[in-house]
Length: 78
Image (tube, rainbow, N blue to C red; front, top):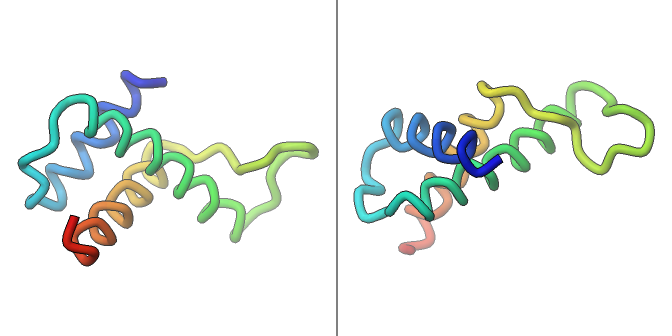
């Protein structure tokens, strides 16, 4: 999961530059958190499987979720 998080976080950072101070650990955590945010976005549009806490987000929604987190991080002044 962490390796996918690094990939998702790196893609989001490439699309939204400005988080150059992030290391590999923070990039991975950004990607993982972005996957959760993407899952919550997916839940708005379709019902998850019975008993699932969140909707499984695909790569695109995970990157979108990570970009939302990067945007919020920048607005809060990190």
